[in-house]
Length: 494
Image (tube, rainbow, N blue to C red):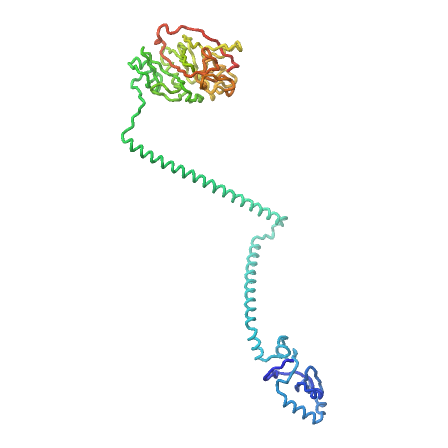
C-alpha cells in the first residue's frame, strides 16, 4: 500500500477494522476509529487488510496494560502511518488510477495539473468531432428536407426506379461525351474556317491594293478597244447598202425587234452584207446549252470574226422573217486538211418560239458540200433519208425535246439543233480535235460531232463552220444551181 506524506486523514470516516493485540505485536500500521452504525457503537481497529469488530462492552474488558500500550503506540506513530482501505462507502472520489488512496483536494489538483494537457487535447478532439457531427447533421437535415419536398406520398411506387435512374445517368454521360466530341470537332472546324478567313482576308487586301494601283493608273476614262461601227440598219445588207465596206461589229434592228442588238457583219468587195448566225473555229466554246441560252444566244462577238458564238434563235427569227424578200442561207465548212466547201439554201427562215423555232427553206441552191439538210441514205434502212432530213424540223435542246425520235437527240448529241431522228447535218455538235472519231469515243455510241454527211463521213467532225444569211436577191447570178447530192441517214445511227 502506498503512503501519503503530510496530513492524510480522510475528511470523514465510516467504519474501519477493529485492532487486535496480534496486530500490535506485529508492528503493522493501524488506526483506531470510532463510528456509529445504527443504534449500536463499536470500536473499530483498522489494520492492513484485516478488521475486527467488537462491541463496546467487550472493548472495555481489555486489560489496562494493553490499553495503555495501544494509546502510547498511537501517539508515537506518525500520521503517515495511518492507513485505510478506500471503498465506495468511505471515499469521495474512487478511481483506480489513484491506487488505494482517496485523494484530497490537493491531490485532485495535482492529478489535474499532471494530466491537464492531455485532457485539453482530448477535449479539443471531441469538440472537432462534435463540430463535424453537427455539420453532417445539417447536411442530413437539408437532404431530408429535399426528399420531403420531392416526395409525394400519393404517388404510386415506381418499380425499378434505381435501374431507370442508372440508365438515365449512363445516357446522360454518353450525351456529355458526345457533346464533348462535337465541341472538339467544332473547334477544329472553327480553326479551319479561321485559316480560310485569314487567307481570304489577305486576298481581299491584295485585291484592294491592286484596285488602288489601277485607280492610280486610270485617272482618265478608259477607252474601249473593241470597235463598233456607227452605221446601223435592219440587217447587214442594209448596212452595206448604206456605204459600210468593212467587216466587223454593227448594231441592227429588224423591223419587228423591240430594240437593236449587236451582230457580226461580213461585207465583201461586191457590197454583199452577210449577217453571221454561227461560228465554230477552235472548240473553245461548249455548245451544250439549254433552251433559253439557244434562244438568247451565247459566246462572244469579236470585230475580227475570230470567236465562236451562236447569235440566238430569237434574233435569227426576227431577221429571217422581217420582210417579203426571202433570205438565202450559206453554210461554209472547212476540214482538218484545210479544204473548204459551201451549201446554199433559198428562202431560209426560222419560225417564232411558239412554233419551237421551226426551220424551213424552199430548196437547195447548190454547193460542193451537198444537201445534207435534205437527209442522207446511210444504207442501213430505206427510211434513212426521210428521218434524217431537217426541212420543217423544230429546234430541240436537252431540256426541250421536239424531235421525232423516241429518245432525246439533243441530249444524246450534247447540243441544240433542228433534229429529226436525228440528223445528217449537225453544225452545233461536239468539237473533236483532228476530225476523226468513232462510236467508242462517244458517250452513247452516236455520231455527235460537227458533221455534214453529204461532204464527209458522219464519223468526221469539221474544224470550222459558218452559218450566214443574206437577202436572196443579193446572190450573184449563176452562183448556184439546185443540186441533189448525197442521201439520207438512218434513224438507228443517230
